[in-house]
Length: 320
Image (cartoon, rainbow, N blue to C red):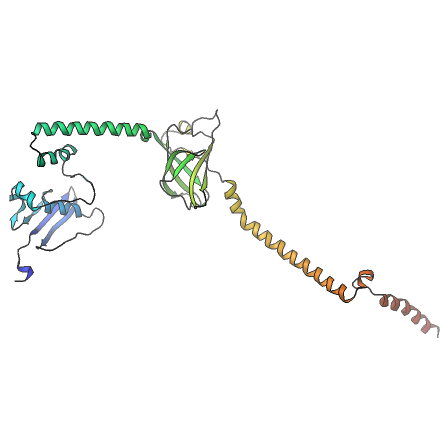
């Protein structure tokens, strides 16, 4: 008997799933035979999870049917269904088809003999405890008080990443949230940072890029903020993102000026080579004719004598 003549362990016929006007599955057919391992691949929000929930009975399709071991899934007793189907998440997760309280009560219902009232009381207690812990965490980390600021840099931010720290004179006050090119001027880079509300960011505070050691990793350093200056967030009109001006560090300015400095150095080097070449030529000439130190490189005693004799010769010729 060939494999395809065996009854499929799971099958779907004409399954349709839609959410409002969004059609997710349009008459999907699927068969999974004993011993097969089937994977479902697709892009984000393409309906993979909805299909698996439909096959597991966690989601009722708008049309079509799902069969398990030859029987309609909706006709299988829940207790028997639990012995035939198992769900294992890739990582810790909740059943999206259940409320948070129902997710908490599910293992209590499956593995204990507690009454429904007792399960509900335990779920309510756990929810209250979780809310209290979340409140304490948010209060301790100032997550509720984060303020979004924007910084525009007119230099490369290579080495800076989302999540990198923002420091105020070396003290962590926030993190980088987003980076993008300024749509109006691509020479500028917009960096959005989330800073704690108590960070003393004032109207004269400046932001700069700093290098962390020799790793090539950057972070944002804030400086300035005179005692009499107004808080930047308070001075910014409502509905606008407060913007911290940026400035270049001396190191950045020095690195930008380095190519010009190298060009000037090369020019000085060429001039130095020319001077050394002239000195070398003069030295060789002096070695060959030491009298040039007295009479000069182009003036020799014989030349002067020749000049003195030349007029006398011309005079003698005229006398004759």
